[in-house]
Structures are given as structure tokens and as C-alpha cells.
Length: 189
Length: 275
Image (cartoon, rainbow over all chains, first blue to last red; front, side, top):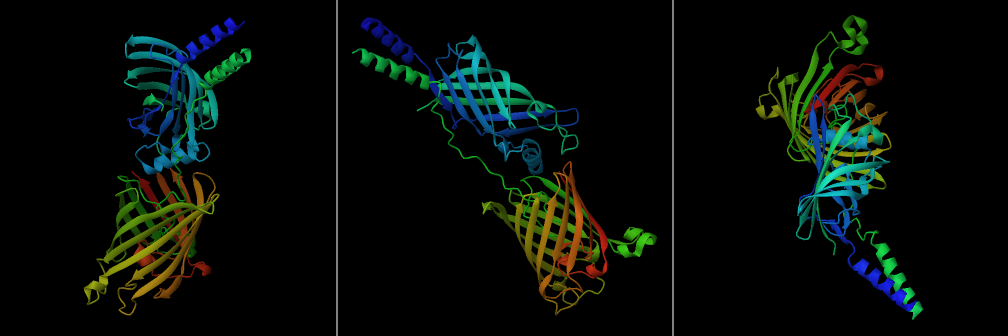
């Protein structure tokens, strides 16, 4: 019995020592969340660097199962026109009520492109405008010296998140908004 | 010994279960946006709003000189003459807004600067404070004064804005120097402007505005205006009635020429566009 316990302990110790490392968003890097609205009439985009969150992973060659959480302050999106920012915040995204949008999920698939570049798929929940939906997003993970760079490009349908698609707003808005994420994480202290 | 191992196992497993619970914590505070009015002006008086740096603003306003009381024969004023103003504005910084305007009465050219001093939340209310200052030159005056410096007028507004629910309101103490360019004794006017705007939704609102003169020279009456605003696609449309027919600040602050309470009012409108 003692022996069994000993072995279990050793196994668990071994497991936990090989276990995951935690990474946090590296705010010293140039992080970007960008949305793009494309319609035949007018295209525009909004950008913010207010992204925060964490990434928990074993190692670059064991990305599957890694946990990912990131959030962004939707009220900080900058479209270049002050009044348009206000319309977006107050009339459509209601950022006073829902200041944050976040994604939490796990990597379900990873494919090596090179030693430092991986194609990944993450499944999880996206929270936006008070609505949570299951979502699968594709992205790329690059190995950095003491962290990773994460890039993703996916589409959200505004009506899925109960966001009105304005017909006569400042600009025409597409129902499908493309989201681009580009941020770095580094080993948490 | 068995207990020891069990405890050890417990510690390790509980520890490893902590792994999925990140030690990450939000460190940055959430940014707060103070928003009261959306347009840079109520009907004639300024709000604390400015343009974002680099944004351009266009303004056109009309006031019909024939009063509404003339009725259908004059189409409530539409058939008569107008005072009008065209202006272009520019956001120098997010807080500093400059505009240049021209109105046809006395060939008035105005140059205005508005600076947003403060945006804060106090007692649960959003509060914004701005100052607006301008100079106006009257380039076409029928009886030109001998002293040409009298063609210049100066003014300043202190603007305090707040909002509770769907009701935005503002107080605008104002000072006008050289109130009447044809009268050398008419040196200055102090007025206490005030307005309230009720927003039915993100598009429709109603506005009422008053600008009583507290001290100094005044035309025959204090100014009152009441109207509606529609905001759509980056435009503001304001339609109102007022007893004050002036479209530029230096003439507007001097007071009204007809009595609001006797129904002696004029139709006016303002259209602005953010480019």
C-alpha cells in the first residue's frame, strides 16, 4: 500500500512538474484587436490595443488542450470619427452596460507548420453585448523567446449577439464583422 | 505515514487543479466615457462637445425674418428674408475645437475656439465643463461707426453640462463685449444661458433654450427658443421657433427683437454634418 501511494505521489509529482506554464498578455508588445466592416457602400474599421488575458499551455509541441482567455474593452475601439465611436458605444454595443467582451476556450487542434509556427483551432465561448455563444476560431501561434504570439481572424454575426444592424446610421454596417486579433503573451511571473 | 502520503497527494492534486484557474487578474481599470450631448451646440448656445482631433464639421443655420404669426400668406416666414450662417469647424485636438463662420447680417465673420476643460462623474452625474471664446468682425455695416475698432465684438461662454437619464441640461453664463456696434455706450452684456434636451431615443429629441440678460445692454427682449432635433447618419437637423433672429453668437447674445410670450416668433433651423 505504501509503495502504491509512493508511486502515485511520484507520478503526480512527475505529471505536475511537466505540467502547464501560464502566460499573460505582454502589454509591452504591440497588441491589436481590429474589426472590419465591409459593405459595397463603405468600409471602415476600428482598432484598440486594450486586450488582456492569459494562456495556459504545456509547450509549443503540446498546444492541444491549452487554455486561452482574452478580453477586450469594447468601448475603446477607435474608428477615426468621434461621433461614429459614440454611435457604436452608445447605440449599438451599449458599452456602459457591457464594457468587456471576452473569449474563453481551449485549443482542440494544432498543426505544425514549422518549429515556431502552428496552425490552431480553439473552441470556446465568446461573450459580446451580453450574449454568450459557442464559437470555433482558427488562428496561428508563433513561439517567441519566452512566450507566444497569437493571431486569429474570424467572423462574428452581429445579430447572433443581439446587436442591431443599423440601416441608416452614420455608415452602413455589415452584418458580418471580421475580427482580427494579434497579441503576444509572455511567461507570467 | 499513510496519512502523510494522503495529505501530500491532496496537496499536489489540489495544486494541480489550481492550474486551470489562472492567477491572471485584470490590472487596467475599465475606461469610462462621459457622454452628455452629442451635438456641439444646443439650438444657438454651445454644448461642451468638441470634435475628435482631425474631424471636420460643417454648419448651416437659417432664421426666417418674417414671424410665424404672418400665417399662410407668408408661409409662416418661409417666403421672407433670412439671416443665415455658414461655418466650418475642425478638431485641433480631441479637446480643442476651432470654427470659422460667416453670417449675412452685417457681414459678420466669427472665429471661435472651444476648449473642453473637464469631464468627470460627480454625485453619480456626468459633468462636463468647457469654455468657448470668439471674436466677430462686422464687415458690412450700413452706418459705420467712426471708430473702426467698434466693428469688432468679443464674447466668451462658460459651459456646464450634465445629464440625468434621458435629460441633458446645460448652463452657459456668457459675456459679450461691444454689444451694439452702433452705440458707443452699449459696452457689454452679461447673460445666463440655459438649455435642456430630452432624448426620446438615439435619434429624436426636443430642446428648449433661454438666454436672459442679467446685466448690461440688451435688445428689447430676452431670448427663448424651443425645437426638435433629429440625429441621423452623422447629421444633426434642428428645427425650432425663437424670438431671436440672429445666427451668430455675438449678435445672438445681445438679445431678441420680438416678444416670445406674445407669440412673436420665427422659424429657424440648423443642419450640421460631421465629415
